[in-house]
Amino acid sequence: MHSNCLLSCLGIWIISIIGVVQCISEYRCGNNHVISNDEVQRVYNQARPVVLGQVRQSTPLSGAKYTGNLCGLPKLTYHWFLNYSKDNYSQVVMSYFLLISADGELQGVISTGWKMELGQEDTWCGEA
Image 1 (cartoon, rainbow, N blue to C red):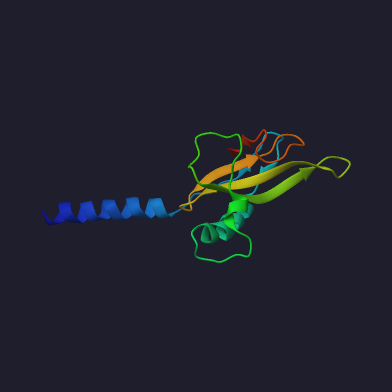
Image 2: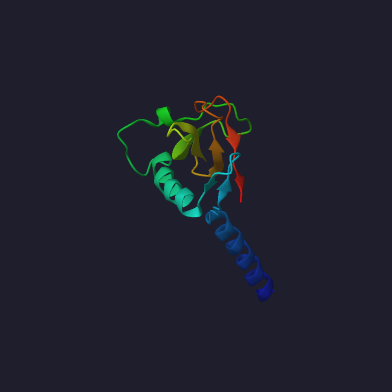
């Protein structure tokens, strides 16, 4: 009986630890641009406390609310800038953003369409 209780508690503990640990990998976007683990983690670590209200910032979160073309996201999802790519003429051609829900969960990484603004023709970047 005691071992069953111990195993049950251990199982619950492991599940709760898995839920807390956010596994962030590299992301490869449509134009073969790779966003590194370090960059995603750095931006996520900046965004999460702000979204959760643990840190005050000078600009309101309403400006970071994602209202783009991607479906299936939580009602309140915010975007945080990650990086951009340029063409041979040093023109920004694609931008990359981290999407995070209001409860601090990483939703993924997206890229804008070629020479498009955020929200017009966004696509998901896949985990590499």
